[in-house]
Length: 220
Image (cartoon, rainbow, N blue to C red):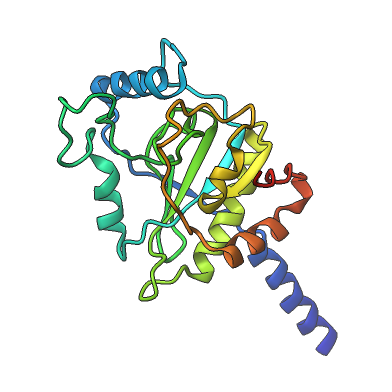
């Protein structure tokens, strides 16, 4: 009897580890105006003239929003244009920040836009990357175990669907300066990032090592 109970427990544990997570569509505004601004961004920032905002994903970039709720995080990406953007400022795109995925603190995964459309979430690499934002990231709202599990699942989902070469944390993006994937035309356009944290990235990488992602380039 004890063996039967143990077998049932182990079976239940194995089943729980294999439960398929779901992706919920929660679209931001991505109308013709946003498409036009995205194509304009591709041309201005990357010298890529395209008929559509589609990208060929080669990279997954993990982030945190530094906002404590799903509602606030979603609202940050929802509108077409950046808040307080002034069209007369030369060379500054009005395209709002955006990301393909947003993971809530309970691990729920939301898809905010088409996976193969360019989002504005990482300098120099938007044209080839899929962004995954996580709600939280501050001392008051540290990333959760459920978010970690969902990020691991999502990386596996994307790596099986696309030819992904790199998995990086946002804090690692400047390591790609000088790399063939790096296309930012403005040498002065950089921001310092720490998301989603070194420990978080180590855990995601360990759980997805079977994909043999290429190592992040060393900074010169």
